[in-house]
Amino acid sequence: MYSKILVPLDGSQLAEAAIGHALELAHGNGAEIVLVNAAQDSLAAVPEARINVSSLQVYAGAIRGMMYLQEVANRIRQCGRAVQCDVMEGDPASAILSCARKENVDIIVMGTHRRTGLSRMFKGSVAETVAAAANRPVILVKEGVEAREELAKAA
Image (cartoon, rainbow, N blue to C red):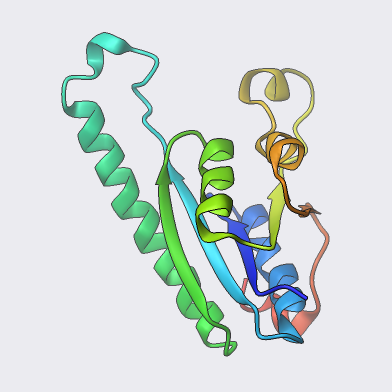
């Protein structure tokens, strides 16, 4: 049913919980897992600070992101699943949507922090933005919802 499954990761345990669910979906049909991480430019809101320091921060963030994704990818490969990694520049929601288009994935499986109140107002909801804008199915994994035990170990 699915040949490519996108799993966005931000380094949190909640985001990694989506891996077990993606592996369940991939289990029966040999789907490839695509991991993505967003390298954000944290100085974008301060234009006068964008003197090359910003570019270095994005580059360093991309290297950290790729090292993290490779660690996760190695765990997934131990489950016998094909996996590729991609670090995209930009805000998380845009990076996820861009990667989904670029890789032509069939479905996005991601964790949701389920922010409320002020936290949601200031940080927004990446999962909600992706779910609303994606032109493919999105599965949101809530905190505490575990995949089957043998597949969750990869997460």
